[in-house]
Length: 180
Image 1 (tube, rainbow, N blue to C red):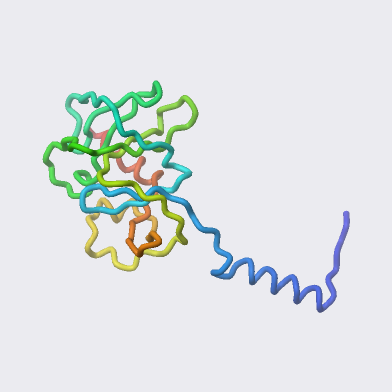
Image 2 (tube, rainbow, N blue to C red):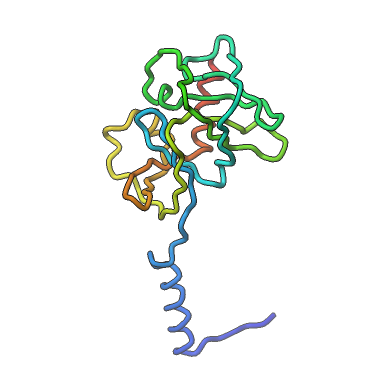
């Protein structure tokens, strides 16, 4: 076993290096897909958000809650489609795909669709490179959204997004579907 002892100068340099690595200037930026789900600007980390689908055939799911739009075939995997705007607002109205909406598909692990989910969104998606920030004001957000948000993100034009924790979102949606 090799035991290294640092003299005073080396120890100070190592300590300064550790502090510099932890400083805000050296924080690793995150990459996310920013999408518009109804009135909500949401950010999904690229580790989860895998694909955007422009053309798809939506198949209805009988007796599904209003926020489940249906299911789609994405590269041979059957993936549920959720309208987060409807889910977060608790409108209770059946959601409908609107013209021009696309899908953000996430959670796909190889050929396994178990953790996969497609989210309906509108407008043009935005690739975000950001430093995660805490959400400072949760008061105006719906309860369901508060439960799954991780923090805040901003694009290079200053538009703010709510960073979503996809694992928490999947767990919350699964829990709600299990009681139906």
